[in-house]
Image 1 (cartoon, rainbow, N blue to C red):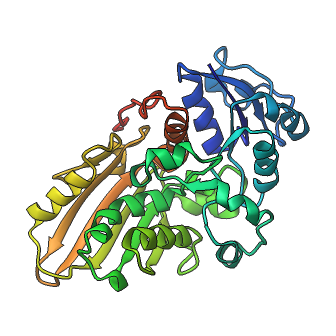
Image 2: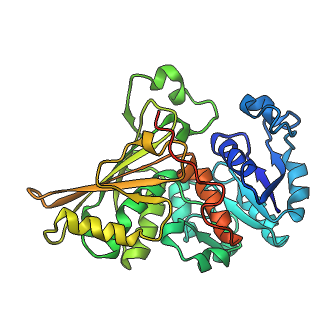
Image 3: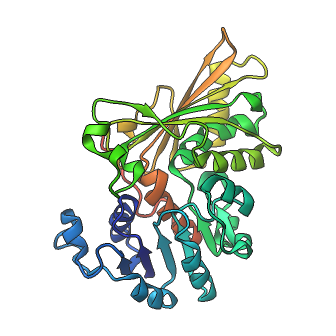
Amino acid sequence: MLKVGIIGATGYAGQQLVWLLMNHKFVKIEFMCSNSYFGKEFSEIYPNFKYRLDSKLVPLEEATDKIKDIDVLFLALPHGKSSNLVKLAVENKTKVIDLGADFRLDDPEVFSQWYKINFNFPELIKDAVYSLPELKSKEEIQNAKIVANPGCYATASLLALAPLVKHNLIDINSIIIDAKSGVSGAGRSLKTGSLFCECNESIKAYGVGTHRHTAEIEQELSIIGKEKITTLFTPHLVPMNRGILAVSYANLKTSKSLEDVLKIYKDFYSSSYFVRVLDYLPETRFVKGSNYCDISLKIDPRTNKIIVISAIDNLIKGAAGQAVQNMNILFNFNEFEGLEYLGMNI
């Protein structure tokens, strides 16, 4: 059995991670840490776990003492909060899967520009792999000491755009991403903008031109395209609990038929268990509660633009499910172990 610890277990992504791991047949949860609720039973915070997971949450000090005794540490913390714990885990030869942003960017200066804080341990970057599993080799993930789990918007956007960039089908200066997310993407902490009366019956853009996931989207697209790529990314908040729908636009370099491009996508993701290339348009309700990313596309011959639509559950493929998928690869389990859940539809 794989011994795991979770720090940040009571946030939305953290509790989703707990749910997935307790249903994974090769995992034993050794501890769950929450500085806000330590001493309470996990099922007291999330009553749906009653009689299934009544373990007490431990404080950070106790969790750090236990890091040396586990195989993998999951971190589900806000940006800037992971690096000290990652350093401790690496020193104790414990693998880390970080759901936060601290190790997603290869350049500490770029991290500081987007996150407005200094990166504490730049020497650890060499030990980290930004792991969107469909776009990284298994060997690279398995050799990592630190797995940087991608952001939710980045996951939906990169999976949508990677085949176009890889096959040099688009003008890389024309990429526009318009994405909508459910309110859980803002986290569980109290914020005025996330209150029911602020979100319900409304949709709003935010982080226009400044959203931090832009940096990792550009970083990974640049690696795939082997040249510097910039994008225009605008996220929106919509009044639903979970889900992301990303609509990406770009200019085709030459005229292409829809059938030809769909074939390119299907070939590109032919060995990717969790990416479904569809002949119809995705909806968030078809992936809700699952680790799938659904992708489809349209071509507008009048403007010679391609429109790619992708849908994920932001808490699963956009966070906890992808973290478990990375864990499976890291420890050489079947990639889909513990993740074979279909969407809930309604």
